[in-house]
Each structure stands twice: as C-alpha cells, then as structure tokens.
Length: 339
Ligand code: NDP
Ligand code: MG
Ligand code: MG
Image (cartoon, rainbow, N blue to C red; front, side, top):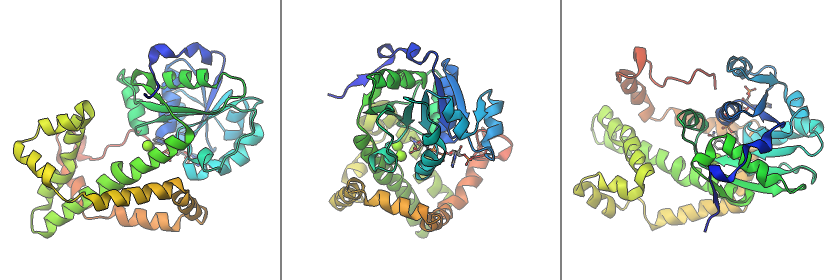
C-alpha cells in the first residue's frame, strides 16, 4: 500500500532557524512562498531583478533578492522556475552560491530524473510536488484546505532529508490532504503521462473537437460551448468529491447509457496512451521538448499560437463576460499578477 503522511506525521519545528529560498514567483512560486510564510517559515524569494514579479512579491510582504543572493543565505532552495530553464539557472546562479549542505528542492522531478541537474552528493535533494495548479495550492491553503502532494528524496547525506521534506509539505498546507511517498522517476513519468493523456492533452482536445463537431453540424456555438466546456467543471467537481461513480450517479440513466456505450475512447486510444508513456519512459519526449526550448522554442511557440486560436476560444470570453458574478463584464479575471 502507498505510504501516506498527514499533519500529525510532520514537525514544523524542523524548519526553525532555517531559511527557505523560493526561486521563481510564478504559478507554484507564489503559492509556496506565501503558504510557507503564513505557516511561520522564514522565506526569501529569488528573482531576476528585471522580473515583473519583484514588486508583486514585495507587495505581499515578502523579501525579494536576486537568485544568487537568495541562494547564498538559504538552507533550503526550492527551484520553481520553468523546467526548461532550471538547469541554466542552477549552473549559473544557484550551484556556485549554495551554502555547504544546503538542501535542493523541486516541485517536479524532470531535471533530476532526466539528468539535466546533477547536484553534488553533499546536498540533500527532495521533492514536494503538488498535484494541482499553483493558484489552487494558494487558494486552498487560505481556505483551510490543501492540495495533495507526492514527495520523494533523491539524496540524503545527513539522514534528515525526510524530516525536512515532510515539514516543507506541512508548511505548504499539503498534509491537510496527504503526501504520498514516491521517487523522482515515478513522479516525473506519471506527471507527464497525466498531463499529456488525460488532464490536458486528452480533455482539451475532447473539448475542442466536441465543440467543432457540433458547430460544423449547424448547432449554435454558444450552446456547444455550454455543453462541452462550461458543464465539464460540474462533472469534474462531482468526480473530485466522489469519483466516477458520483459523477455518474448525478446524471440521468440516458446519459449513463450513452457514457457506457460510447466508442470515441477505445482500445486504439489505449495503444496511443501506451505509446505516449513509452516516449516518456525512454526520455524521447523530454529530449524533444528541451531541444526545441534550447533552440528558442520555435515549435512550442507555433503550437501555442495555433491552439490559442482554436474556434471554441472565440465564443467563451463573450459568454463568461456575461455571467453576473464576473464583475464589470470582465471575464477571465486574473489574480492580480502579471503571469
Ligand atoms: P512558471 O512558468 O509559473 O514560473 C515562472 C517564474 O519563474 C517567474 O517568476 C519567472 O520570473 C521565473 N523565472 C523564469 N526564468 C528565470 C530565470 N532565468 N531566473 C530566475 N527566475 C526565472 O512555472 P510553474 O510554477 O508552472 O513551474 C515551476 C515548477 O513547478 C516546474 O518544475 C513545474 O513542473 C512544477 N509544477 C508546476 C505546476 C503548476 O501548477 N504550474 C504543478 C506542479 C508542478 P520572470 O518574471 O523573471 O520571468
Ligand atoms: Mg502535474
Ligand atoms: Mg507537470
């Protein structure tokens, strides 16, 4: 059975007198910095001096320094910059400034697992990987809840790496939901699999294609939008509370019968998923992504442009702007930050 830790299993005092540098203030960075700070941990944020986030982090009452300066005073350095830049930031700004024995931490195993970052043996290396978007990691913490995490230790030169890992997870609010023990390999491979096949690559393409098939058949785009996009959240909320069975329980028998008999996702899809998994396991997905990023991300940028202009995106903003709870007709309200 999985080993799962909860609040009672971790001791926050392990972090007493320790300074945690959070490198990056994006989706995960702001959530880790603010949650740890609110849990009483001594936090410094490491950013490029030119970053738009410097002012925002300061407004939240956080101490902000350059990445080398923040690293130099930290006992734990959590690297929360984008995966494709981490190895350069590590080589240029972090590794040369690390205190002896300072711990290195990650929220995703990518750079350690695929060997892009190779810390020397004297540094503990651990992972606290939230199974949720950064903005929800912050929102749920403020609501007294927490996003579950998976945790791993890659290097443990002093024997205290697990205590630090669990204390960090507790300060993040994650032990309110649970922390599952894993390895960098398992986290990396399952995380990439989930986002490619189900959470993003799977669902996003189902929504997009469903919208296009309906509108091509002459149905109103507004109705197609509510049908295949807006309503999805309601089903997912039920699924989140009570699994597939609860999502099905709330739907009509007609809907359930259509669900069981639909042939869109089939054994061919399973084979595609197994193929995607193989490309993750043998490193070819990672290599393709990093090679493109190193070349200035031409393929990534082309894809971002193409997918941000798919047809469903033309109708969604208008409908969301009309919801009475979206103030001043502004849809897609941001959380006050520039990322
Ligand atoms: P973001 O893209 O949101 O992070 C951007 C931040 O990184 C910005 O503050 C940016 O600052 C900073 N940054 C970029 N380049 C540099 C640099 N060269 N030097 C210093 N800072 C830099 O990242 P995410 O939060 O999405 O991802 C961070 C990590 O968390 C990744 O390992 C990811 O896999 C993992 N993760 C992410 C999840 C998510 O919800 N997004 C979920 C679970 C794990 P600037 O303003 O200077 O550009
Ligand atoms: Mg993930
Ligand atoms: Mg991921």
